[in-house]
Image (cartoon, rainbow, N blue to C red):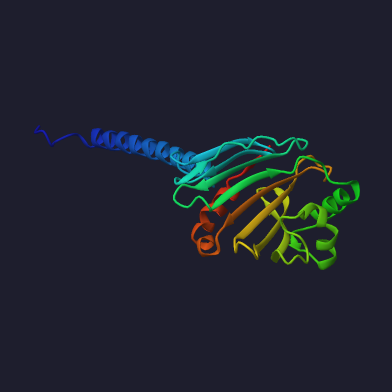
Length: 218
């Protein structure tokens, strides 16, 4: 019997064994691939920047090219806090985390909770007016300092948030601001906002949007 004259039964056994090994390797590969996809969904390469434990944010990921600035010292107004992550090549383009330091009044908190309790929708003029204390001076209603282009409630990774977009008239910067009910009472408002010069806004918006969509809430 020559080297190629393996009995048929032996050939079948060899083929079955090889196929089983191939199937096992494929299953292992697919398992690892699905795990990678699951673990990496909405996130960014490890070479990017991750911010953790920022208010109601457990973690948020930024792609390579974004740099985390140091938290700014509290100037003495309650628990006020501010921090930003900015483009290394364009520092005027940033995503910032801000808490004004003091809770808003009960009526404004009630209005905020009421708006967030509704399904995602564009805000009515009445709702915008009711949220003036929430929006604060960053996005004032009817101001000559800021032109609001959109205000809506949306679901961001399982949490209802208020989103306001617009442009500052003096600097020309455009902004995408997210307002979060940080403690469930509506009184503690956390702000997360992407801000950039108008000519750079669209260029980096997709990266900022990916960062927002990578947020894991506490």
